[in-house]
Image (cartoon, rainbow, N blue to C red):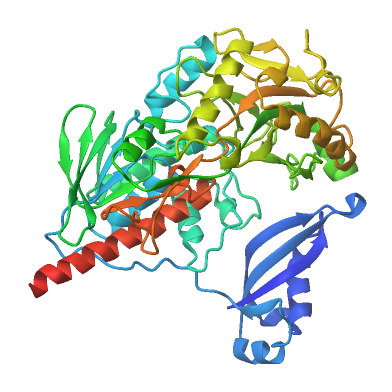
Length: 544
């Protein structure tokens, strides 16, 4: 087949227009085309009065080789890439079972790849199955009853389960692992369109049932799930060559699981696990992350700013945005995890702390748009070693808990009050979506001074890009601290810990992903590394 990119058609083009455009671009008769499959569809809204749909399509026709030679000069035309997943190996029998720690998207795909290869992985999850976890999370939102082991951060599906379910990323993916992620999600019940829309998303409700179906698939392939199984310690033994080797995992129950291969996919909020690993000498370093607030606007305002008179068109959906401002104090301020038609959610995982995140359903039909407005920070802002970023996060989460009234209500402030440098005493036209409740406050008490200064400068700049973004009644909720892991667990080219053989750091928590798709891709990459390691060991034993 032939991949043809950058076909531009009006938003309301008739169905036959795509085939006509393909025939014209390839210089063939329409009757010569046997099949057209949409590989990607995006929209170009730079000119609001004439928004275009932009297609990439795969075309089947007679004489494809001749057409490709004739159009070899056209960089938008090429053979259709082969994006099928290719396993790197299979179990031969007798291998020790690998363990996957964590059930987020990274752990989920690591377990799937290992199970498909016949290695019967053991999957350890400190939280609950996704349905029970959902009940606990909603209980926190409705009644302010936090379960530290079952919440937005911990439990089957990971933090991405209570999010917008975005499935797009800017990672380099030469092996097309991202296609494997999307294909598995579609087979588990995600909308088929995730395979071809430019910015696919799923939404929270669909993610829950998808996670259950993928668990069933992994179990049918020999995988074994253990919930409520928090890893409290690791067993490490020195080797004759001076290296350290993983030999087992100690659970909070006291049980020790013997294993020489463990995928560490614990997510960015497993702070107790990070402390344990540091105490056991696993190589960890501090890394940059970001801190800020969640901002809410009427979704209709964002739609009008992006799409003009075409706002509300069915093919466009709820509009999103991506903003960045380089402040005069040297800080970068940017929008993060934008959720069209969604809600701001309570995302705490520890008592006495307030954390926010964004979530939306597949329909994106709620009244408000929300996004993180966050400021980049570096280890220079929190000196003190690899775990200092966690202490930094906790400090501001505790300040937000106090400003909110010490009951998991979140502190909020209007944009007008923040720009005027005064505490909010009430709300305006934008109503908060955060539950279990909000308390008008001064967010300057919940953020570093440099962050507040940078956000104050950025908001009017963003208002020049999106008219109304800096409207006085827009509402900010604090604090957003879990943008990414504040540390990185060192790993080498084979995805193995740089100083602890058999431990494979993976995903967001280890500092190698950011979002559902990239975490899933990293899970595949690390699982393949485990398979290669197991195959090498099996070969050594056979040779011995």
